[in-house]
Length: 334
Image 1 (cartoon, rainbow, N blue to C red):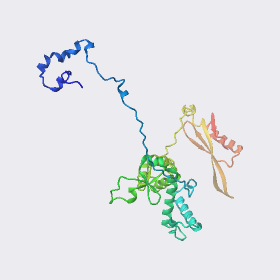
Image 2: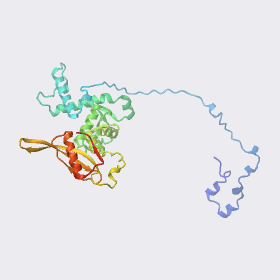
Image 3: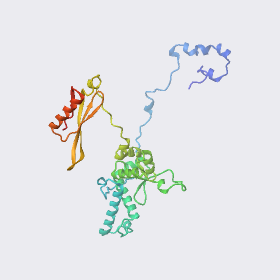
């Protein structure tokens, strides 16, 4: 750092010269006297930047870090990919737990409270839900993820929960909302739970479904997961579907825009069968429709059957009443 006597720029910042004095101050305009001297007389910097670090010694330090190793075991009670409803999956898991209680030689403590009633109880359904969540977490969480986020912990029920910042709140919030249960992404149990919440809310949107899920569960990148599942909801697809895009309409044919006699260019189709009450009961009759392409006028006849002979009689009567025809278009259905 140069002192002020060598740095003439400090004169403007110090404020001890008036503008009139600064205008007559020679060193402010032409610089210090050193700039007029030969370059060889300039002061030299004693430090050598190329050999500055040669004086320092290189020391190798070894640091030892201790990490906690967490062991995860894959656990599956029910194959969730074979079931399409969360309620059905939960009831299936509850019946499986009751069956395990009956056949197991080693009595599980947490299954002793399962009653021996015919119908499933709320306690059994709650235990089944807990087991299904443990099954999902056994495949969707690992020690690398826990060490990275440092927000998960295991409670007394072997459930991994997300550590919240609202631990000091004791009034006005449900205990389940303080420490949310972790649910992994891309898991069939998580998918069925999101679908159930979405349908329970009468097919609500992404934000509403996610807010209700976060009352009890925490899904990493939850909005993305909920959005992907809701986009596959068939009921919502029908409501969000856009109208069918009509094809490009072709040019209007000449037969519909030129000025000609009525029923000179016609289209033909059959209507029926119609049931008419006759002497022997109900009989079938058909109605040929002649439509003028130019005026959209309609001419109706009546035939007893669909034979070619009956049609020739109809055509002869039509020509006798409407005149000569130039063009007849039909779909040839009959």
